[in-house]
Length: 154
Image (cartoon, rainbow, N blue to C red; front, side, top):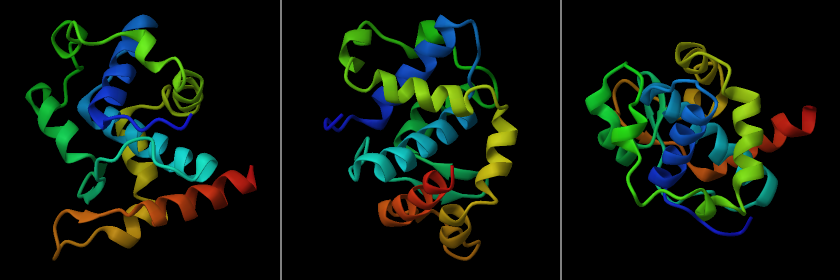
């Protein structure tokens, strides 16, 4: 699990997996799944899942590049037929799929708003968000420290 992906590719995996199990995901939910995937990956492997920056926005952690790709859906479910292009292949995720399934199993059943509320109670977002300084970065160091401590408690 040493390869680093693009956040947009991991987002596509979550959209494809949701379609595969007849579930729906919104942009908000994808953002939170990316946050949890990155945090747990940093805690477990000591390396990021993707290099894209995560920022602390008013509604929680956001990967801006992915947000802008998916913002046309608003709060509606993402249409997999539009969001998944011919470039998507399950084979591209062979090494990381067990990890992503673990993230989905832990967080995928939660509603987008429940995930938003959860992130608002967690140190990486709390320590990074400021109404005066919009779009502050949630550092990998903050994520790793928080999720390593959380995983250690389980």
